[in-house]
Image (cartoon, rainbow, N blue to C red):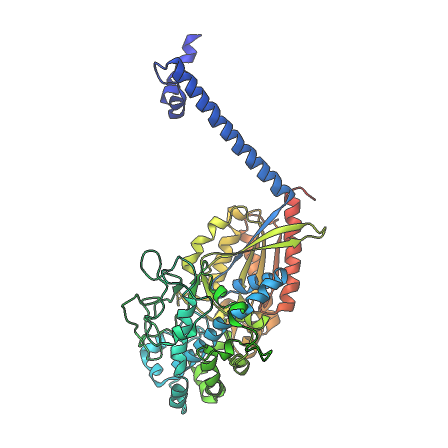
Length: 545
């Protein structure tokens, strides 16, 4: 009987775990008693942790939590979809934040105007500039180069526009610095309770830079590099903000740069309603005092430039020059050029639609929680995650795949004639198709419900009506009719066939919607349907139905 035990005994000595659990040689009775007590305590702690995990699991079954990921490339509509969730399920908080978006909307408008000025300037007709047309806002399309040698349209009033709109250069810099100075990261200066616009009115870029614990400027804002230079640009392309003692390069170009803030930046707090309005203005009147009474508030610069901005945007020669350069600013997020008079009014207050359209790129993962009732009036916690869509941010997707209940994937189908800002050799729609394929084929997501938003159908309709042909950019479309019904059906079937062919689970809950997520009424109906589907599937999975 002893022989069969020999191999097991030898294996136990070669097993590190078994060796570690063996009592030490020459163990005394007192040492043995202490060891057994320690092992008993360790077991008690381990059993307690196991019990906590079981209780947590039981609580999740009785109080289910739904996790939803918003996926898609940059500028696909993820942030707008998240705002629609907020508008539907956290309406009071959404409305309280509206005034904070005023600075972002101002920046969107200023950058659109300055982008037009850059595009129609005589200096922009240099050969090298033609190769640098891509932009972070996705406004420039990848149309085939024309062989026509027709002379470029000149804008006769360009010098007047430039002089009249010169104050916007400094205002853009002020707005960028303002958004880049949040009240966290333990700054070494005392942050004001409300924005002191006069702090930012100085043209010196070294004024009021948030300093982090390491003594360097806190990295809450990012301005990507740009290759060209222009006297109209505020910041150096190689830095976010100058360090104390440094100097700003006002001759560098930022037309291709997109301003972004870190997701931990609490920029809304400084621009909330309570910090912007006082009441009353005096003891003898009920008139309130607001931002319009602050002479250093950006609205005064915008208001004084309203007429030149309107004239620039309505100038036929400007429109023609933009067409020649294949620039469509109206297709980009944060487009407010059709609302100049309203937005530059002294007492302008952002509407829901303005906030939905406003563009401020956020670095990192943005999470919002909502308490939503199901059909049986049980409240379920929803956590919706907006993860970055730029190529260098997609590595952050995978960690959120665990325990996710549903994915809303957004594909901007109007972008069939555009290229990626980060890679001008890649068509945006082709990139969406590749990302869609990688998501549906991922085995980690085999049991996750997937909802596909074929987004920006309003821009698609306008683009097709203007004469842009899909077959010029996607030859496989062939000679089919170039109208919205046929083109949208083509995309619907193309994305659907990829799911059918490559999906790791063809029986999962899968829906496709044609959307324009800036359309509140239509999107609210779609989100409600999506919400009901996700809740039903989730309840089935936890055996409550």
